[in-house]
Length: 322
Ligand code: ADP
View: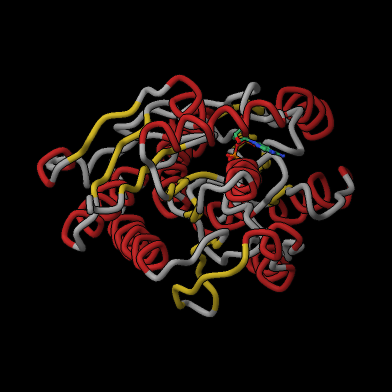
């Protein structure tokens, strides 16, 4: 009887550390006697059969690289009943007995549906936003935070030299974690996140005026992507305070770069765990971090969880960045 075959794919937005997770899945799979197929461009690759057999050396020299060697995509066709059925049929045709999906909540919904169509799936959280309710940590978050901090430190040099104010947009459409962490790390005067309503006068202008009176001459305001409007905010701040104010959108630079130690280690552990779950006959599970430990949860239960924002840390940030 031939060995079981599993496949690995990356889906949705890319994140640094996805390669480390792919490497772990491939190595753990092969050393436990499985065949491992790489699927290109997320669920699209399952629809078209764009897969290739991987060996131990297929994942050499990728642990330190950002992006994903398997490429990633959003697949509207897969996001239909017919699409899921077509992908499941393709898996059966190719002899794929299980799939490891590295991505965000959207990708996990796909994994749940594919499991429902008879192909056991395991999810691994990979997104720089840290916006997955079931997991304290998502692969790519640490690298993105550190990239953002490096960029804002550079901005600070020029902001300080000119006595300016910089309004900086960092990623995070629905989740302010990246803004909160980087905001604390760069000593932002104010941090705006989608989870907390803000008042322009109280939270920006009054804070700037207060710190100005104590001698502060340059300011950094961090704004999560989901709050947006950084150019308008910068204009309004300049009008009200007379301080020259510039808007900067960090954008996709936050997605790239060599993954940090933390992302490489967490990705390796999660990738290994995903293969262990498939080997144990489990399906419809997602590998997550809870209380700093790597554990697994039912995908459907994980998807129903509600995110919590660290309001205490947010309050600390505003108390000490003054
Ligand atoms: P992320 O995984 O980063 O959250 P998306 O939300 O774009 O990214 O989802 C990635 C892909 O997962 C989508 O292009 C689609 O193919 C699949 N997907 C998303 N939502 C669903 C869903 N409700 N059912 C089935 N597949 C889905």
